Length: 385
Image (cartoon, rainbow, N blue to C red; front, side, top):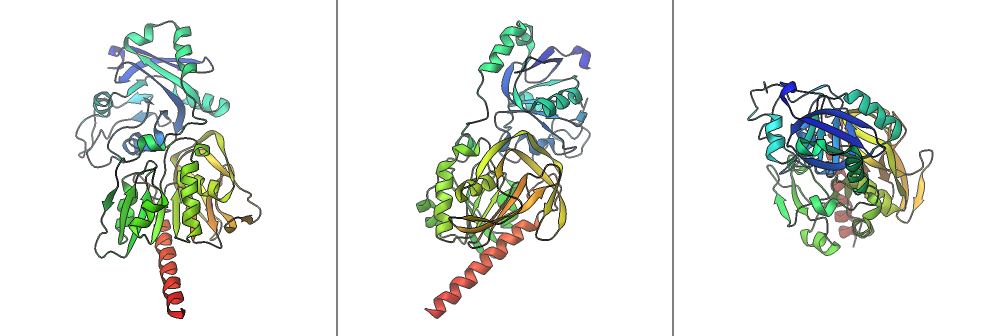
């Protein structure tokens, strides 16, 4: 089957080229080349808004055997800029499948490439770092390589990119609590995945999802018991409006929980810097140490930036003491922050990982505990007054 496919070429910004065959939509795409080590969950990966403007290289050699269903999307569309696999499945074999992976990629205009050495490509990205890339298939693949390389180099870099507003909802909406409503949360959508409000709703939380441009007045209007900042794409150094909002939330001592981009914004709001990782963490098999319990969790990651905070001591910030609560065991990257004097914490990874693992789902319960403690504190203070 692969021998009947049209030629395609992948061009990295450092000039290295890989030839393969067209997969998905035919045409041209550019973005940041990153690799994901997940063995499963490609549908969740493709529909995760955090992958906006990124070309995802799958390290698993065989992709597409479960096809595409109508239940596992993490958003309303595919967000990746391009998709790279070694061996695409000839046909889906899952009873849940409604169409093939390639049919869905083609229908949504996502350009991909297959039948190339993804192991060599991944090793190159590990050694050289994430970089811009282009995939060219069909007629575009026959253009001179110098012209293709120029297209790649002229494409925007991820550093300095402000992308959350491009993937977030334009209008607020509500995900009702399952069963009795126990709490109300204002969730700022920076690229939120559908599983996130669902997991909060299962815990009796009514989730008001707000646009990335939400202000403190928008948050107050919800009368929330807690505030949540989601995952999302782009460089956290550009997220000053969201960091300003979070500082106001912390000042008002509203319980806060952040995931991924929400962790980086908490770091920024507290006064820490952020930096770009060489090739990032992406996949569903990343070991993280919870320093408060000593427990090691296998976790899902999708981040190319990290918070620059000291691991060996508590830090003094404008909002009191803060400590690094979680650390990646592969490279000592900060994977969580905990405020000791205001009710706030965050993690860099994804406890809502629909495709697994689910080691970190307890963090939503920790958020519930934080809101419960704050409600008890406010009630007690009210009685004293």
